[in-house]
Image (cartoon, rainbow, N blue to C red; front, side, top):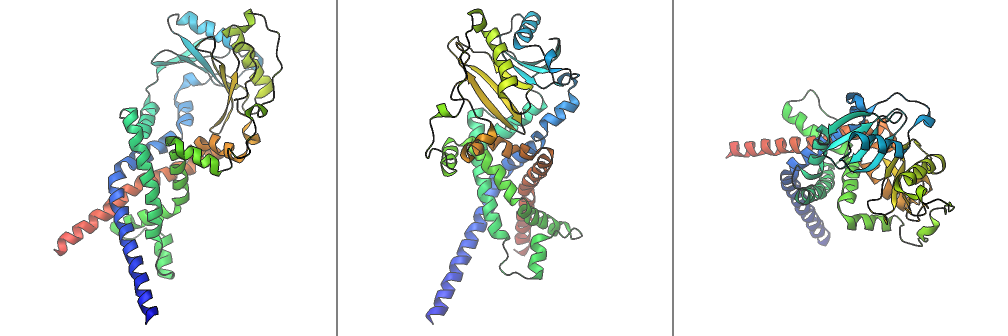
Length: 386
């Protein structure tokens, strides 16, 4: 008797939980659907931004030559300053032997320069198609303060929807019929059934990847989540002094002339390429100090969406302790934080994972559409019954 009563209570609780979960999945999905759709479509496009630009923007490409023929930062600076004397130059992005240098200037335009002769290969407005897509993905084309919060919390909702969707997907009983309906799409069915399968089955197959994309996005949106994840992954505990993370750089007896910005940039550029970089050595970013007391910033080991930040004392040109180590030498907690962007865009495994991520992003964009049609069909059916 008591056993029967207990069983009924458990079934009642399960039924109540299922109804609440289904209700939340429906209304949170309807509330966030348009935002998830926009983020999914723009994300699908942005995955291949660099590949598409390389094919459609001839000014980005140059004929590769011997590395010794690359012009140092001081020569590139002088060439750009001569062509654009009224523009303040902040930094140079060397992108490899077969790519032009992007010059970071105080302008609405992006300047690209041939790394072997200093000639400008292109001047384009920074608000191009991909900038437009990026603004939509990050901020929904709204003010950054408002738009970034909307996309962040929409991603939180989407992450919950993935979990609640898995609960709804999970069959009450496992048999041949439920296995077929849960894992297979009935392509020859009527549109209503096909739409349901696309939502149900495709949602399941992309679940893990969709959760990874969403969670990595949340790590970029919420500082507290990033710090918590870093701690859970083993960060902070028994962490050594950061001074031990980077090998000390030998002091050089440099003259006053050699310590100015341009000579300092040349010295750092050469040192990064020949002594520090381990991957993609000819791709180096050099940022000039805005103030005399500021440090030099350089970036290297840019590969598959991961990079290595380096900081140099502007007076002694010593490599500073807050510089990153080579990614493969990092502890898991720091490796995870530095690889988060790569995990978010699918660059972690090269073009193969990019293709997989792009398809997953497209599925994520389709879920609000197929889900809406399921709800709309049921709503129309209820009206007919009335």
